[in-house]
Image 1 (cartoon, rainbow, N blue to C red):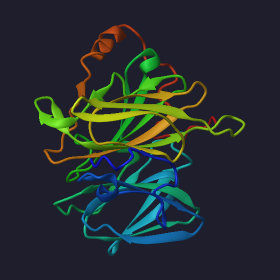
Image 2 (tube, one colour; image 1 turned 90 degrees about the horizontal axis):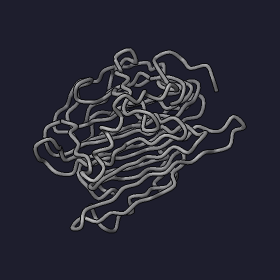
Image 3 (spheres, rainbow, N blue to C red; image 1 turned 135 degrees about the horizontal axis):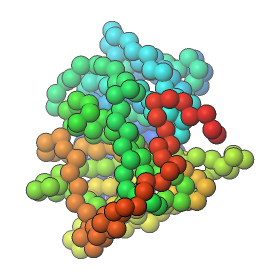
Image 4 (cartoon, one colour; image 1 turned 60 degrees about the vertical axis):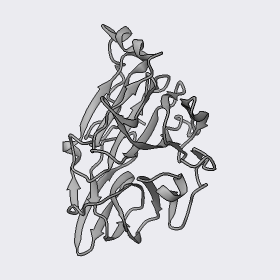
Length: 296
């Protein structure tokens, strides 16, 4: 990663019409991972080319029709990332894609530079594996919708993490920045949304990233809805949800090796996992399932 690239990308800082968020290998200073976010008003549509990237169309709020070349899929979507697990669409490289939102909505487009052109296809919410990780105040929910075991892609790996207010996730700190036994080399993007208070007050969360003596990176940042943090290398975690404010983040990963998600804990903190033995998972989890959550 170029030292000139700031790993913290505040909401709106990378906007390029029609996208609110644009992260590419070029502006991230790396080689594989990317992300765009579309915010569409009622009835709006956007057409774009995927180029060298395979992509997903992942509803953050609302549903949409996705047309890829001459085929079309309809995504049910969701009211928000805090109300249910969503369906999604996979769109291949070298395609022309149109996203149309009859009722408006916000849509993430995780991306990876791809060498193979796989079929355009639908990802059902029923097939998303909802995993509960950690224990106690390190409990979190991981929606494995585009992980190697759940959905085929060329390089792209993506998942969603939901952390109840007051909890820590991406913990203990871990890394995946070299090809080695038990570890894969993956560039990672974190995209955040924070649930508002009952009165509508915007919330915030915090992210920690730190590097190696020969590969420095230092992040301890407040993050809000729409912000992005890039993780080219180094230990990352915890992601900290402020009390009262549930935290969502979308992880987008890709790298040069086999499509595997293998991580190595920071040896200074890996002992924490053993302390979870016998400690129950936070009873607030899961925050979402494939069924609509009715509480605000």
